[in-house]
Picture 1 (cartoon, rainbow, N blue to C red):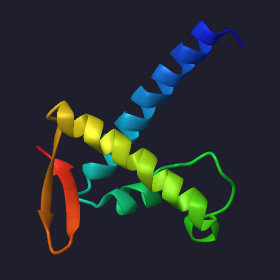
Picture 2: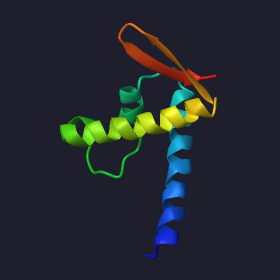
Picture 3: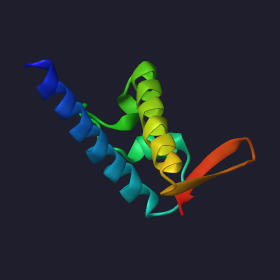
Picture 4: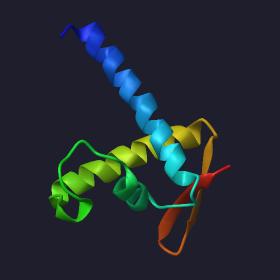
Length: 89
């Protein structure tokens, strides 16, 4: 695969994943971890059987999409009780 094709593929993936994160937040406010649990990852099995390192990567990816949506002012975050909740504006 040529690098330009890969760049387009990654951009498309980012849009698709951000749309999925937005759809998850339509059900109500959630932490990055809660969002990551609901994302449809390209892995076999269910979340509880993922290795801890895979879960950490999933939460970090979810957080990246949440921060991007927050910067675009599509969602907001509320901090309190030692956790951060993301929800729709």
